Image (tube, rainbow, N blue to C red; front, side):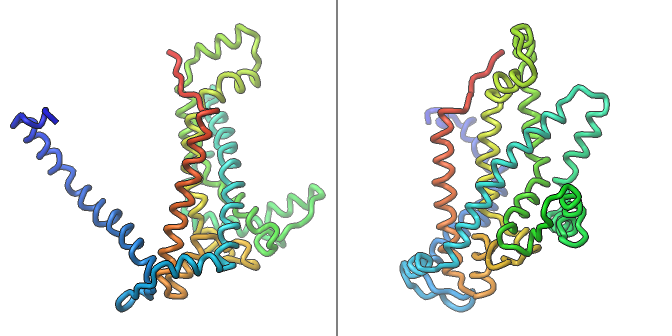
Length: 298
């Protein structure tokens, strides 16, 4: 810290802190304080009114014996395990389509990206119409192909799958990140691969995919966080049903807090979710050493 000995450097530091002070105040007031407050509330019985009553680990012990809690956790992990990898594949395919050397490629990029900017509640209602077992276009197409007519959001076996399909409507955001990654790959690598006789498939597996692994890692971590916090789709379309098939973790947390007025239990669930997300993220980072390529070629 010898650089702080200079009056000029100290003045620059104070000016810098002054300029970022609104962000610091906002971060402390709206992020750090609520996080620490929920940790305190998780050890209390609190309805949102009056004074919290200290109960120690009672909320965490209650979660351990709560069958709905375990079902909501299972539903969420099932959804995340499907939605995140499928989302990465869909985003990669969209990015490859956006990267084609066509005159109309800008129109295709806009068309592929457009669904991701629509409000989630609007997309949810559109999806309800598309997957309607009686008049839905998607179901009519399935019947025309000789496939069974599935009641996507009325059958516990398919409700989560329907929401996984819905999640792919937001793949446009991730596709743009993948497109940036594709643009960063040196063209000389593809030219060298062509000279070696590599076809399109071989170029993808030997050049594109290895150099896109850092972007894939980013998408997996982001998708994991969003997948474990899935809420709006279940709230709008299924309300946690049928038969608790889409009673996801955050949906159950919401009910604990605002329907059952159990802020302490909801705060305990929030911290359990934080720990689960942290552990899964660390697991992905740990395994990424084996498959992520950070080498850059000039």
